[in-house]
Image 1: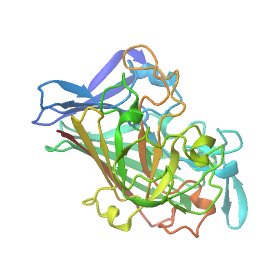
Image 2: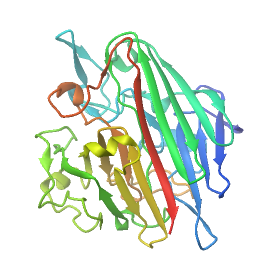
Image 3: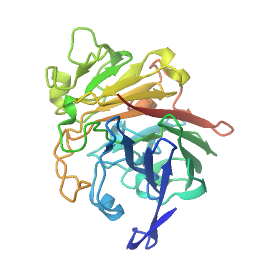
Image 4: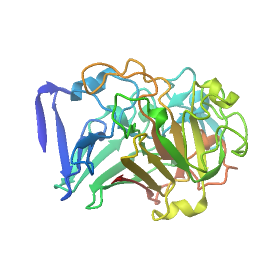
Length: 347
């Protein structure tokens, strides 16, 4: 574990950094603040190495960005419309932080907390967090744990567990942004394949405004590999939010962690990433509002510098029990479990 003693987190204590490394030379760096994934450096076949993740220059710079770079997001990733739940058939207000809606768990979500390091070695690290009853408006005391494990074959395995003493919607994810070519290129030049036939349309505030819709015949179709630029802003759905910021309902076969949910390829053909997840959906976000985010080189990122593939329940699921996915409400006596693996291949 590394301590950044020159900079203090908002709680007045140093940031604690952990570096994982495998025998092949891949390294992954993580931080206890926000249980954040800071870096992923992959050795290429040329003998060079490449940073595959967007990130800031210093841990303190993460406090100056609103893009959730690499953070663990919760209690509920993505949006809950009008920052409200129905609890016992009565409206239950949450704290809003995107207009009148709640995004990624509220104004002080899990990305803005110090997580406790439970266990770590050179291959893995586990973080735990207690979220008290009423936190950001959510009911129940929630105990959360996230584990990061780097395997010998360049797979970062992220697993989540949670328990509650009152019924509460739980939806945890990691908000990493990927640019497999390096951060100085337009990430929309990467090629993407998604194993999904339907996506969820949204309004200009990112709130679902229609039923799950077939991708056929639209620019939302990634069933066959293509660049994000190929059909960028072709659809009204994209135009509303300046690009891709939509959830895709994955094929049911994807949830076994041995069938990919997505593939991403660098534009230069030297790196492939495959995503495996037990979650029912992936949110594709093309970094539409990244402009001005502090960058690793000390400058700032432009919009579309990286893309996120967030594993999760569909957005606003607490208001849509009719959607074909597991129940997003965690109840006392149950355990929330979710896992997402990102595997990197030099090609």
